[in-house]
Image (cartoon, rainbow, N blue to C red; front, top):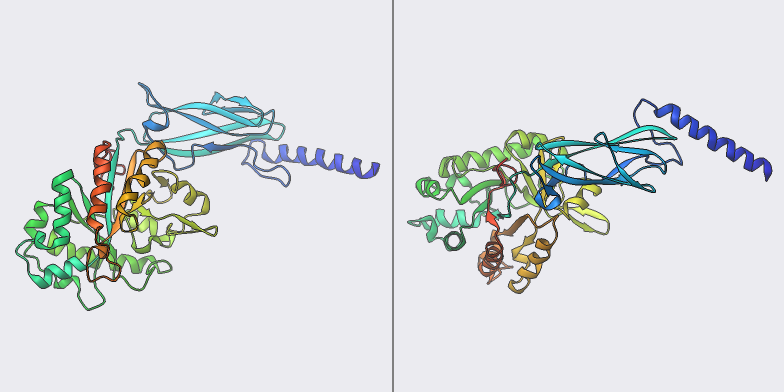
Length: 395
């Protein structure tokens, strides 16, 4: 027993000395039994921070930085000594630029180590909402077949126009190239181009997918295939609705993409991607294949920047076709009480539930949209498009 204890003591001394020698003046190296040496826990890497997350000063936004470090280490945050209690540390940092790198450094028995995160300051933030409608194709076929005098003779577009007149609501309609019965966008006439232009301040069209089926069309597809489909849809939008109506997509069908598609999408003008970020049986889905840590973060916050691509990820706060009228307010109210979800409301629904011929038609679908938009309006939220500025706020 004595020999075993002596051997263990010598091993620990050797490990500690080795740890100090390996990391001193170099990158952080985690050794078995030592674990992560210093870590910033808040804010999260990629966090988008606004006035609700700190104190507005003349110099910028003062936010709290907190994390953990080995007991006894001396910790600084961006060069300033942090307050420490046991293994916990915290400090204040003032964000002066749109993007800020926060560096926590610790020095102690295991040497010198750093942990870095980058955050975004939503400097000109204000309470706002975005309304996106997925799976649009039926109204395009209806207008083309009925040859209405006005776009808004189509009952679906008339509902949206009424909501715009009543509340100033803005909508992005994410559209398909084709329907399963053979309708394709080249069949849609260009004689409404002037009307699209006149209403482009509140009504936009964006790519969603080539068609509704198969499900999850881009989940494992090469990014090039998605880009080809997008170009086909956008070419038609430009033809029949004009450049004022075309907007970069913010929802790709089913919210699943290969991460290698993010950079091409950003280069194409995409700035925000919204999804469901649902966790079923410890498996994240409708999350664009973000890792579990980031998916969990997006599920509890207004947005998260992916610095590798430049795209912000956002979670849909409500899906109106799944939310009865009486549950709309109880769904939105808790979000407004949490500073991490209160600033931006990402409202969402699907077109097909408006149509009586659809097998899962929702007769009060319009009332659900009205309830969500009315609540946002009464609580000071302004309608925006996510592709403008920083999630609808001036950059």
